[in-house]
Length: 263
Image (cartoon, rainbow, N blue to C red):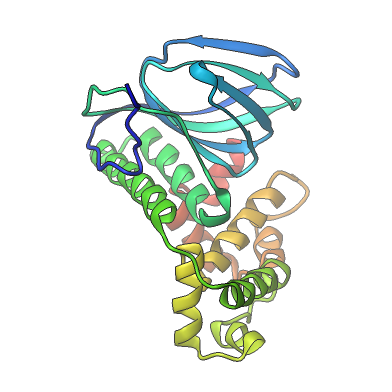
């Protein structure tokens, strides 16, 4: 029997079981899972690991990758790095048919990390509506995975232009005054056309991508206790600490101070 593809089929999520941040420290160790107890979406925070499934399917995941593990799947894991850190959400699809594992290309998932962090922090919270909001975020993750996997891509010239814009953002994100107008000028198009092309190629607006790059850099800097939050924000291109705290809480789900305390 062919296994159902979660991207080609619209499946309903019946419920969340858990959302956990995990850290496996089994350097070069082989681990075996004999029949997974639930479905799961997994986001790799750091490290590398190979997964080999029955019937020969296999893939290797690295920092920033997202993948799906089906209910009932049997697989082995070979961890390549000293630390393998990830966020996973255990849930159940409302469909009994067997499903196949899927590795999603991280080239098109430019905002997926903030969704996973937001899901983790919202699920951990004590708010009365935490479960409903967590389900909404989980559906947002599933929707983005489907959208980016189904999307048709631009022709080579436009792809090259968008790659140039993306590279410009990756290098110049520390400039607090960086704008869509400046990005559009790098390839000689209007701001409206840039937004359209960038969204078509990467599934996210240029400003949203810029924000995600700044947040990712700030979260990296926050690992160093000798840097203040204001220094982490400024070095990452945020115009003020107040603005950084507001965006961080909105996108990640908790304050930067609380996030830092949990590192």
